[in-house]
Length: 221
View (tube, rainbow, N blue to C red):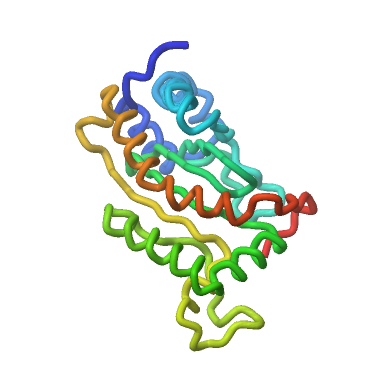
């Protein structure tokens, strides 16, 4: 496998054009650009980071349109996730807008979500999470993830961490855009630094959910 040398701007241009023409004809005519300027560097990047963060899964470029009203066939970005437990890990994405990095807990099972909320409710462990999130936002990340509009069942509306308890997914992310280093090997260094900034959060989730059985039913909260 070739060493990671950066994400070529041709990959960003490819996704900008794909957003305008998300068709099989365009994909077939330009798939060589995807292979060379998107898939290959993402494969090389994840291989370079594997020793520190584990082997990442590179997502397929095709959308699952079976249950979606949106029948466009191709994703307009390429993502990869280095998971430490179901739904918990680090994420990297390249698309027309440039580089996007994230981490945290994405779409936990109902059982895992109940465990997370009970831990957030705990005065000590909940305060730990607040401190970790404060540090990540100070480092330039934004807290995100799907949330309930009201309070979760069993928790008071005036709970001191009610905003965190509302989360159904709890992630943090940072949009880097297309800085000069994106097309160079230094991109791996920057992504590694960002993922290490998120390590306390990822490890907090992993510790909380250790031993929680994975829900394979396909249900999500």
